[in-house]
Image 1: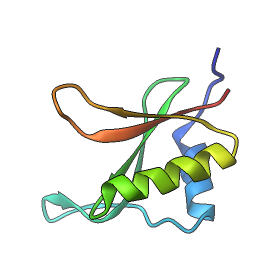
Image 2 (image 1 turned 120 degrees about the horizontal axis):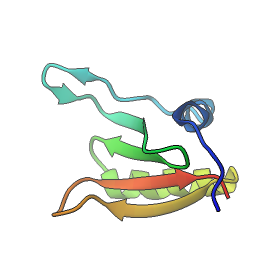
Image 3 (image 1 turned 135 degrees about the vertical axis):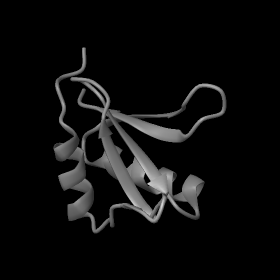
Image 4 (image 1 turned 30 degrees about the vertical axis):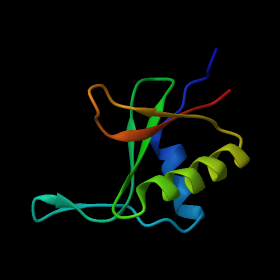
Length: 88
C-alpha cells in the first residue's frame, strides 16, 4: 500500500530540478508544471503549455528516478492527461 504523500514534496522535488510552475493569469494557465493534492496517498502532476506529451515523459522519468511511483493517466471523457504520483 502506498504511503502518504504531500503535493509540496513533489513540488519541492520538481523545483530542485529547475522546473517553472504554471500560474493562472488572464483567464488561462501560463506554461509550466502544476501539482495538485489528489488524496492522502496521491498527487497529480500536469504540464500546461506546448510539448505536453514529451514534457510529461521527461517529468515521469525524473520522478521515477527520484524514488516516486508514477502512473500516466487521463481524466474521464477525454480530459487532461496527468501523472499520478505516490510513494511506494
